Length: 110
Image 1 (tube, one colour):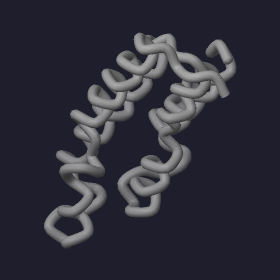
Image 2 (cartoon, helix red, strand yellow):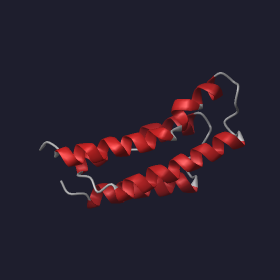
Image 3 (tube, helix red, strand yellow):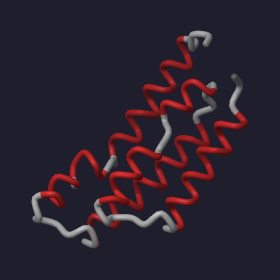
Image 4 (cartoon, one colour):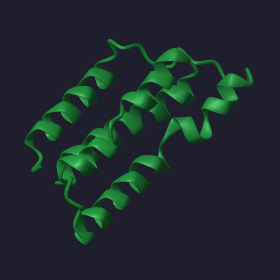
């Protein structure tokens, strides 16, 4: 596997930072696990929807090689949110994000 260029690495780091800024797992899932917030809480829903949209936009605009795109795979984070009952696999934004990831991965240069 060829090494990523310095500009691709910088772009990847920016993408990770942007996605992380609104990530509900970082700030809110602990509240759900402690019972202080319900998985269906409207505030959690708003943050999660915003994060899903941001994630999709980052994927679609970053123009990264496949190795970098693979590092942005949303499936592990989505699995946590689905398992916690915050999202369902059929949620429109979940399916849109997964479709965008698959499309971007397929279209990215090797």
